Amino acid sequence: MRCSVGLYRHRTLIWSFVKRDLLARYKGSAVGLFWSIIHPLIMLGLYTIVFSAILKVRVGAGEGTDYFALYLFCGLLPWNAFAEGLNRSTGVILEHANLIKRVIFPSEILPVYPVIAGIVNELIGFGVLLGVLLVIGHPIRPVILVLPAILVLQFALTTGLAWLIAGTTVFVRDLGQILGVILTLWLFLTPIFYPPAMVPQGMQVLLTINPMYTVVEAYRSLILRGEIPTWWSLAALTLMALIVNWLGYRVFARMRPAFADVL
Image (tube, rainbow, N blue to C red; front, side):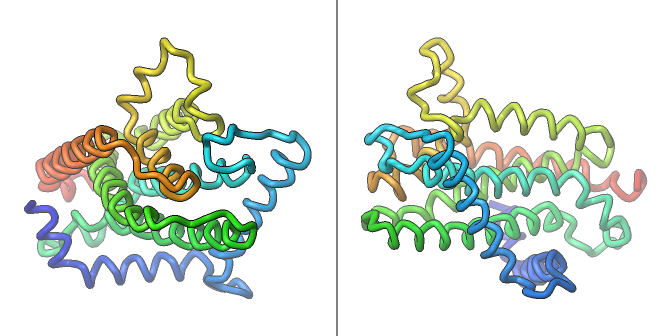
């Protein structure tokens, strides 16, 4: 609760960091922010050529689409935002050491703005996906209005882990390298490149403790299948997101007084 109040109080400062971050990505390029639209279009086109035209990969009718490229792109949207937020959190405190040494600066916002910037890019990709679905005649059902609730849980989960990682990296500089390995393993253990039904029975328990599996499946359920995810999966995701968010903030707050001495 305290962290939510703090973020709301500093919302203007957070948004200024997000805007600066997004503008810095495309500074000096010819088309600027339009790259954030062009990039997902290129990726979706590439997935279509490789998986649909060349490899002829198909998913079952129960997954809501015959196009594997759309199935894959829909799963990668939340994952890419999640992974970007965590990867960038490893260096965000070190990059702003001059601000950390200021007594009045709210350092807890630093791991938050890369998470929001990643979600903004995800929303642009979501707009591209929605446009493609409308063009091919895929029905968009009213349940898609539930998606903002999933986005809030995804934000809470990612922010909690970002606080944890950002604070720990100040003292353990190798964490950035370790995180890269962990995220690669996590990506392939999450059914993004394959349907969950392909996971062997003995490994299904891994899905129940993987919050990103629930997030990815919620996206596919709402966008592609036009169904509301099961209540128990949403309840489990809510519980995990709240616990991780609370724990991440508590750990960050405990480590924060020592940052200036180490940097």
